[in-house]
Amino acid sequence: MDRRELRRRLTERPHNVRFEEIERLLLLSGWSLERTRGSHTHYRKGPERISVPFRRRAILATYVWDVLRRTREEGDE
Image (cartoon, rainbow, N blue to C red; front, side, top):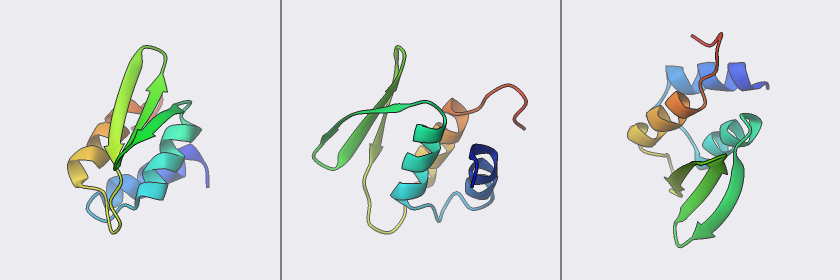
């Protein structure tokens, strides 16, 4: 699955997104894992940083929307 397809799927169901899906989108979008500390995983792309908490069932929608906003590129809807 490519980055655009993954973004589309996450946009359709932001309240039911697993941590692995968020991590995959970030890595496909050029973000790199900076560190994991406690239950939070930190990613970096240039000077920008984002922290995503690990949750077993689903990531909170507010984090999903934040990741979708930060991984948007020209040509994306």
